[in-house]
View 1 (cartoon, helix red, strand yellow):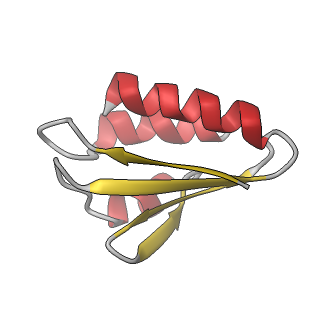
View 2 (cartoon, rainbow, N blue to C red):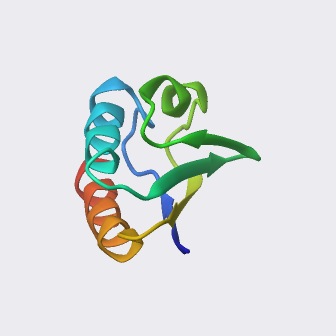
Length: 85
């Protein structure tokens, strides 16, 4: 299992546009991917779950990846978070 934490820098938090980008990237991988914020966890491949976390700017999220392509998924998702959130 791979994981990373990331502090959201976008002044709007995780809103529809960047959430869609991150979800699309997560769907490229076979691994199970989840995102956690304030004790709530959602499937990173489902936009309504991600949006339901209501992540605000400055909050830290944890992303966990588990599966055959977890190394590649972790690298790609971290880059996606850095570029979009």
